[in-house]
Image 1: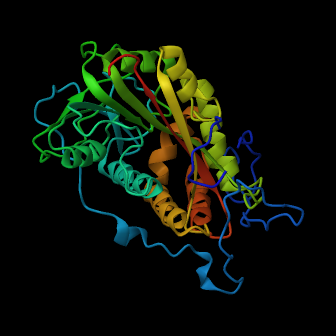
Image 2: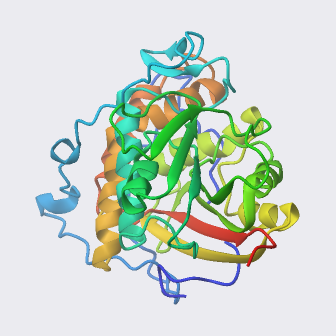
Image 3: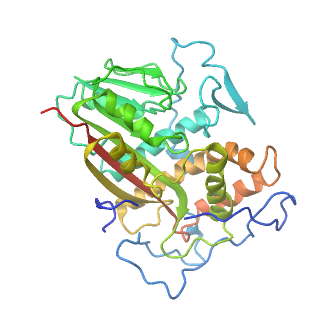
Length: 383
């Protein structure tokens, strides 16, 4: 399958907690200083491998990916809305990072502060590049009237959709009011927990959009049943998810790398603590959940998104640079809660692993990627 094309079938594991080594505290674990390895000589590329551009020479300073994170970051700080109760704004704080109110599911793993919201907006950008500047893949009608964006984050997808379809009413929902105050007149945001019964009436929306809900959903079929209920007959529901594990096709991720022994280890082990999945593709939760909920005309599209700008394909290399940027901007935000959950609160070694992780993220000789899948389906009935 050529990268970025649809496939008809559904889509790395992590090692367990590593033994202590080097300078980090004894209770923590750390990869050795050299965390990269050359591709095994025996490796033969497969047709669906994500191919890398030539590696930089050993003596070049270009081993660093060279993408300027600071210059690419915007300053669009998300603002809180005025029409929310005080309880919603009573954020939890962990090591100076704020997380959504305990009114909702307190197990959700990412912060809701400005630094993380920057990464959310960067994620939107690399997914737009991945889809060649499309906001969605579902074949919705041009005269779409009412749209729901579940897990809207900063609201960036909902705002862009509202600009593209000014005649449509767009509602974005999330656990925290992290959306801007100034938005198109056809957009509004609501505080809502999609894991609870949805409050909208049956047959309310022409299109329901859900994106990057991994780590938040204990029962995917239940969520898709609610989506089916609120969608009009003939309307569409689209879901975009990722497998969070960073893997490679050419063996350039060493077993003792921070990718494996920190990032992949945390996300793999966190599943049993939190009761949610971070490997939505591997477990085929999207298509299976939509089928069980009762959707028809289900279509699936699979992608590999590089972590960094190392890919031969220019579009994927650009998407990979922004994938790298979203992680460099807030590796802490993606791992702090999970570290405390899996390793124990204040377990030593965390800052050392962050340093190793940042170094690997910048190394063009490590050809890591994440798998991303778009799935959409139609509610039976309608025209």
